[in-house]
Length: 207
Ligand code: 5GP
Image (cartoon, rainbow, N blue to C red; front, side, top):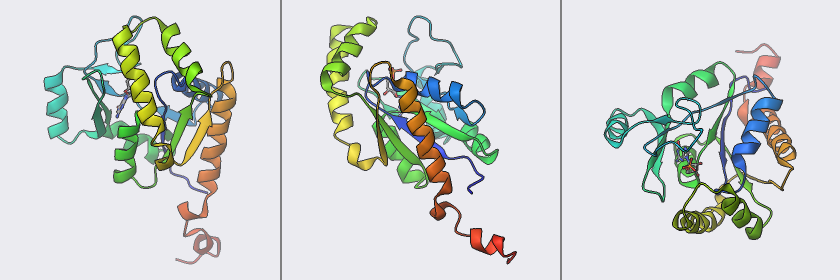
């Protein structure tokens, strides 16, 4: 019933596999979702591409954009870098009826909730802590210190689960199932009567 796109926040600690789940969602339900590309002051990892994974900008430019109000939300991550969601892109896609996915951390998700109470917040969680640690170590791109920080941060993020709307477990090799569950959540939210209070009026042709 809701024709406007939803603002869908997908968070999950590093190692939850949310990136894979989001790729599965985009691929399986082509045209239904747009992925917001964030800006960051972090340096690119091998293979990461400008405008696809992130817009890589320096701190000075990031701070300029903050002061110009160009971010829907932004946060400083434990690696000291800033990450932010560009406002314009998100608004335009939602107006076109496309749901926009923000793949952001919990701090950012809660900022979005404050500014946009209609946003739907989904946490992608690993099945258990051992799986989380194994995934982080298996990635082989981060230093030991970085891994420890991410593990600590993961615990803090999962502790805030109750502030989210939905939790979806991403088991090894079952990311597609997690993606399907998120698609079901979006459909249910779009059918929610709270999102279309004027439905009955329109039905009877009343103003
Ligand atoms: P990474 O350095 O691993 O790419 O990202 C670190 C963390 O920053 C992840 O939890 C990721 O979801 C989060 N992140 C990425 N983009 C944004 C953003 O635009 N805003 C916020 N608040 N977090 C973001």
